[in-house]
Length: 145
Image 1 (cartoon, one colour):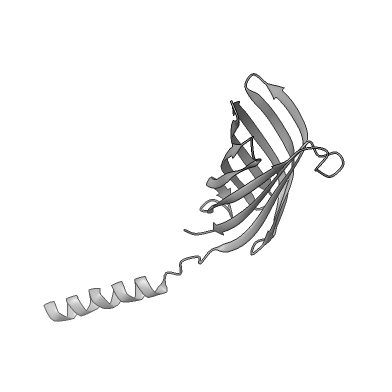
Image 2 (image 1 turned 45 degrees about the vertical axis):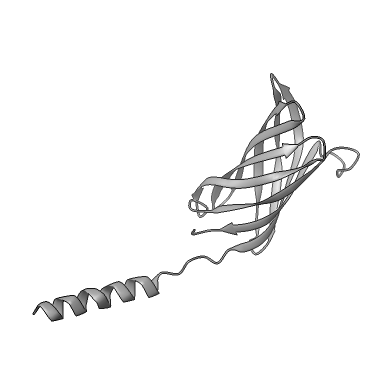
């Protein structure tokens, strides 16, 4: 009887472990087009739209809070699409217009999404007409880490 119980537990564990699929990650390019930039006490409040291309296809609206300290900026951004939203932190150098991003949380389809990678920033005249700031991010995202 004990042998049957042990075999049952081992079999259930094996099925449980092999049945779980881990998301291998998706290579993406995320572009935030900020069409409005309002100065705040220590930075800017930016609003606009975004696109995600590559392994995922997502688009929607974005809001970013920028906090400037010396030659660096720390930003938090929310990206909202019909299937849910995700939030991101960005740490950037204003000297070389580069930085790093990571996804910290989400809702809906993106509730478990995580990701990270490098970014570059652009400002007029190096942006499309009507875009006050552009964040170009590349990297990997996981929907189910």
